[in-house]
Image (cartoon, rainbow, N blue to C red; front, side, top):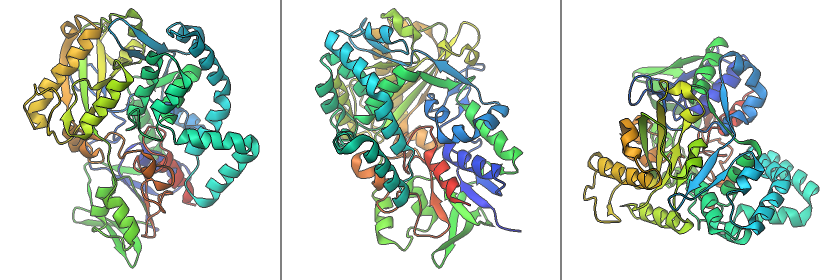
Length: 515
């Protein structure tokens, strides 16, 4: 009997790879160190029974629009995946009572703009969006292998011409602030869009970050957002069911301790005292863990150096809340948005990033406030709500506090006072907010890593996406297609191209290579 394809980690990329391979009749087995599959795409009762909280990922738009769903969506639907469409994806709360929101209704979006010139610019950007999104989306959907990449570049150069191609290439290298300053008049609009860069480690002045505010703004306007019915784990549960129905297996509470290899070829894995032979190994691991499992060296100097110097983004703190009532936003329109970003100016975001990089607890961290029960009341008892709060950015290793008020240097001691700082920021935008809280669960960056070692230092995107670690450099130059110096061992996960998010591109790319 032939050896199975072994997948290390039941995160979104591992599950997608396994589901595609199993559907094609391949023998697949996943080993997952945690008690349940899903990685960052899980939903649990983290506060009170009956309140279902997305542990990390909430926005499933990338998965819904992924190449995997295009191929397997009908089958996955049979296994119970169900999405909730969102017509009001995000808003920015700035000075208390003031907001700017993006919805799928163009006039509604433009009604929150202060500049007539910006309204005209937005309309022009929307007119151009299908063309530019086709290029950018096509790039994100292209494996970083020579011939697929050459084919992609050639096709788009012929379609767009030299001038337009160069313009888009320049855009891909532009910082959020540079693009926003050159595009919009209203500083409120610049602030609202720049926030999206912070989701992927792009502070306003980091080169290469303009693409993310652009895609989220235009995509939110054109298509809205989707979340999972009942929780993000609708995806995980459906993938697991699909894998098992096609003969694949998943073993949880089973940590891979070693990747076995001999003479430059990966041969299997060791789980505890048991050795399992494998025809191919797909490793959904952060670079430092991959290096540990192969024994610290692959035999290729550049690859080893690249994985050992792989840079992670600053940490994130998560706050999960059970609420007795909706958030009492001062700007009442905010109650109807899936995400509410809290951050007053683009300069505030830049300062927050600098403070976190320096090891300081930021004075005004960027807050991503998710309100899933506004659109999916099944996640909480009738009339109650869950709130999902990402605190970006914070350091994993606390060297101090930017205000000098929090004296604690360990997260075990600092997360309570840091949570109070977060609640103060929400309270400014929603007076009486604290009175709605029934229960809370605070998750520090180190708690995130403890629950999922791929989230190194609480880095929820498993590695910075700065230009020197993106595109053909992700995770290592020369290995951006996920192959490794060990034959039969392939990298998948957010550390690999096309990076973080629920699109599961690296897992699907890897599965397509196995014939």
